[in-house]
Image 1: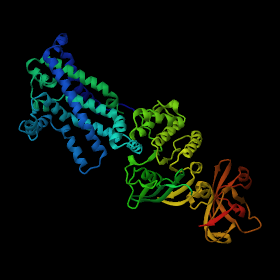
Image 2: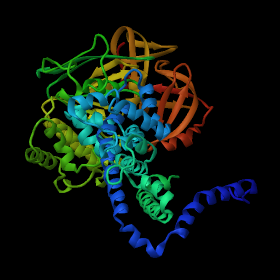
Image 3: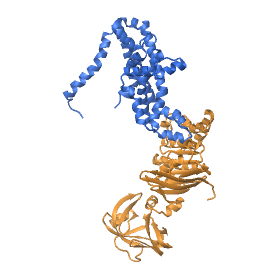
Image 4: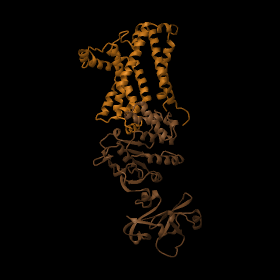
Length: 260
Length: 348
């Protein structure tokens, strides 16, 4: 179809585009380029960056270990209440992260349902620790991985698993040697998305893990804090997060951005 | 049958609107072709044998005297070649073939050695490291066969093994497959809707329609004595069910003189090429003769196939010259006859 683009669509479309792009452009314009290198080398920034990368990666690992099997269960095993379980698993996707943090505190906090027991039995306390950051990030990011992997599993031809079965493969072997390699692109994409979500996590982290530099203060927390005291530092930190986002988008472009 | 029965099965699969119920016995070294129209239940039968589709009440499978239906698919001594092969795309040809031996507990090196030997048998050593997407259809088919045989199955299942191939490759792969099946000492069940594949590859045909066996026998028996319209079409014969009274079988109003002497319900079969057409009623015996209307005319190899409607519907194959001479066109009335010596009658 060709012809003139109607104004009624064109004007809001351009306005929408500007709305999404302008703030990012503003970030670039206002960035203190001259002092950027020095600011980036500040120990507080480096510390936050290190902590962010560490916790996001650890959270992604946790999500992979638990999320891939969970996705498999949802995609391959017919059990009663599967739809309900799927709905529950994806709740963190729409739940305000702060609420997630409060919920984590209630369950895993020192006096929480599970936290109490963890403390007594193993002497483990999660809130306000680096491990707590990982827990908060994993809680928020896992649904992204589960949904992505489940989609890949549903799209994968199940008959390859049947072929594996006729060759003597148990379900576990078939999963490990056939299904997982086949859905690897979906797992990688889900993992990257999950990592990006974990990296940007704010609400649940600050609620559950607090804001202690070097221990629980990740990049987004540092940005928020810096904004009140040292706006230029906030811009620098934001730039770093923006750069990471752009890189991730570039990595995933074949998967999502160029969808038909 | 002198060979011992390797596979003894009653396959019962119930689905809404469809029930498969068929008895199947296959001797060691024997190749049985399940032949039938689409939706007859051929693939379902194969999947049931492999353990991919559960059997319903009353079904059982035993292989070499041992009950097999109680085992999950991965523990059955069964090898299967799928219609589109389902070679694992992320593994090389060699690792595809080595997959089965690995699952059976062989070490990586041993499994690969065994796989290499199988690839050599199917003539694909030089493609051992190729990924499936770089193999031609014929090569992929042979890798799939090697992969299925590498688990040393007692029962080999082939689902439309040649359907995905082009005509030329098909000819070549068919003869190779025949050789490999002859070397295989277990039972083989193959599914096809192509009568030629069935005739060339199988020792025995089992024809199924609507989930039940309608006819079985050697390719020669089935080819000479079809018992359903589907089989008759497959083997290219005109088939009628009538009533025999000595050397004569009456079908509708047409009386056929036949070489055999029979009594009671009987089939009469004859080839389309045995039918002669006339513009006017020929002199002589009123037997084997009927008046018909041409319903359709189409090319059939070097000849022309005429569809006849009338008291009985029939196909007649005539030369293009005859079509011109007799001005055979749809709607024309003709007389059709068939020589008694060219008909074949047998009890229904």
